[in-house]
Length: 117
Length: 108
Image (cartoon, rainbow over all chains, first blue to last red; front, top):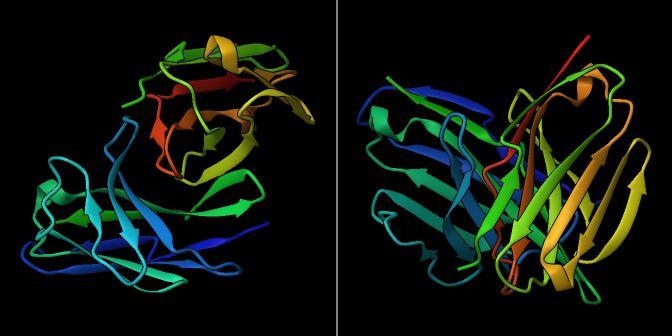
């Protein structure tokens, strides 16, 4: 089946630094990828839709200058948490969809756990 | 947007027991997926089931799209089944809304 790779799986950084998370579709092309954030013991909340070759679409309440998204190719989207602070600590997950006929299945990366000290 | 409700929020089972998890959604959907999130956070796709019934080993799922609900059945539960089970639906193209999840703990 389709595989979505996310890297790194865990990152610890100092407050004020920027962190880049990569999401790759390994065996299929994805014009659209999605980024989610999950707080402890809560559900996944959609942050933004990453569109290949164009600007990302952010959900209400998500700061686009804080969470920079770049979808430079059909297999790679990156999320950069700029000037990270402890409140940005969270679990971030990406997904990419594969459509076959009228079936559309979302495949998820393994997630990135960000801890900002 | 579409509202997704899952029940129960928490469930404790003795190993070997059966259980049913429910997902209600507020509008017609293009797709519905059930996921298992393991203790390390990894999301495992269990079923893609916008309608009908599917089975995979000890797990099965049924979605009744006209009544806007889906059920996930776990039979003969094992400790490795522990984790959080999410129902996720999409009304528009690929954009997915997750329920709050059901936290399952299977005890030996």
